[in-house]
Image (cartoon, rainbow, N blue to C red; front, side, top):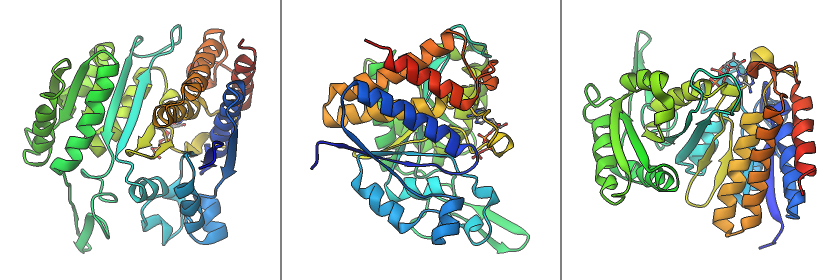
Length: 358
Ligand code: ATP
């Protein structure tokens, strides 16, 4: 294996090219500061891949992803794809499924001195990524959503002990590195068997982590508790769809959906991906906040640091996070955070901040 770090990036649709380019620029600066030799490859995905290869995720893209250490995926606007792509598994779903990226880690952290619905929020949603009620992910072939007649539509939800155990371990290990509090989110009063199994297996795993304080809430109730007192929450573990919905809300509670990062990980692979979508309403106007994509990239470097036992990668990740915080504290931000910087102006400010560090 080469000692050169191999990273890939996939621009995606909508605001994807703007925010992924900004994240790559910032990552290059941080890696350069830590003298980590890196090779970058750009790979097609989404609409441009449909145009050029007739596939939203071309086989060539998957082949390269098999070889690299990690990658950054831009958002996709799959709702605008023509048929047959519209009905197919969307790009991030199919990449997550292909690599069994079962853990979607979505932090929501308030930047000091910025406006937010819940200042002081510092929590992480740990979302199970492979099953639940997302019909595009919960079957081996085909999807868990089907129409027996034109007027009847049925969707399946699946929860398995094995999937809950592995996501619960991720949640508890994370809680051990943080404030040692974990909340299980479910709907076991109505979806008694499925989300009831999710809750019960999480409590079984809790016995292995006696230092972590555990509680649980129904998905509807937890939205109210988060609105009232988000800063009191630490790690929240939940199934696929609940986690997807909840993490958009927590991102906004912490300041903006545009600052909400994530990684999707298995035991040996990880993909950086902003928690938000392709925001077609603001695409191409320089209005997109690249912070979520930059922080997702920092999370990827942190994950790689642990995998490779390489502290320089963690320092590069911290350099990105600290520099973003300093740039925001100094008053530079994009319009969604109340500022007036464009996407590229913000990225340049972060790069300059990184390059001025001793
Ligand atoms: P998806 O279904 O892929 O999650 P969506 O259309 O439901 O996508 P988003 O694309 O995440 O949702 O956008 C929701 C709202 O948040 C939009 O009004 C969008 O402009 C805004 N938004 C999302 N990401 C950003 C960002 N990085 N910077 C600024 N605003 C953003």
